[in-house]
Length: 448
Image (cartoon, rainbow, N blue to C red; front, side, top):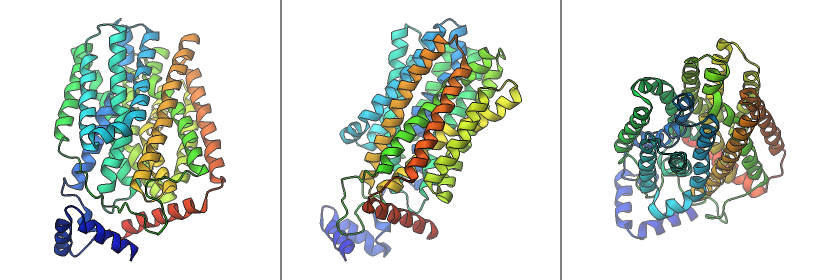
């Protein structure tokens, strides 16, 4: 009766007559909460486009361009490494400011303009005015990506009915993988036209996707997943913060540190470190193929095994793959490892997102706040570790293998923290909310 009385109060509020009329026509109260916006596939496509533009290209397209930036004498090797880290520093700033930007502009407007800002940053990078100029625009592109990462899931997932969280989150963040794959295939083709035109071509692609997804975002009305608590006494605005959630933030920070070296230096390792020239671009394409399947595959794995177990399993595999890369010499071995490692940066995102939702419970506002903290933890780790790796890279005589070993060690520590989290004491309220949330999601999936 509590849930029905709350629904009645909502119906008597502003616009209540329209809500009651919709309910009378459909005969289903839950169907009435669907916003009169774009279809679910369009909303999901808009989310994937945002992750593609803001992170997939704005960040990952830089990696296959590193050898050419050095060979074309745009910047020195050490400057190129630090300029790559500028994007991650901006990503941290974007993650920190994302909630404020979302409140100020609203999710739809914020995501639209962040995509436009990332596009502008790519276009500005087509002109090598100076190191500070390039640094600024790499910073801006990272800021746009940070806002997108925090806000995109909350802008889409609550408005989708019946989808499994892992699969739906994987579809949204598959844009990261598509961006990595696109950077590996498009960049070598565009480089035939010159380095400046390569940056401009990437900007044109992002502008096209920004325009196509402009009206694809759900309208900010009642989400398809009820936001009100299902039991009396459960808080609505205050997120649960059990020990497991705090440990998850540490685990995600270590994972972010572990994925950085391959993400930033893999193409350069093969191209210049091993002296294989254009093979670096080929390896990056294989990395992108892994990134294409990672989000969906790992999201499904989280739905099947539970997100905590899935996170431990994929972290273990990645730690082994990165350690193997540090000792690999043959191209076939590196090719296979590149596919495995490439699946991790975009694939771990929906798994961590699903784990956050398990721990926080069935409250969109609390989920958004907790995911924001997780993104900040990952972004802070990415930014700090990027500068750490750049420093080690310069001091070690540009030894890529040392960076890969450090990354493997960070993933090993993440495993230790993840196992410790399984035995951490959790408040009873948090356990009940997580169980209720999981049951609700699985019930919705069965009811499809």
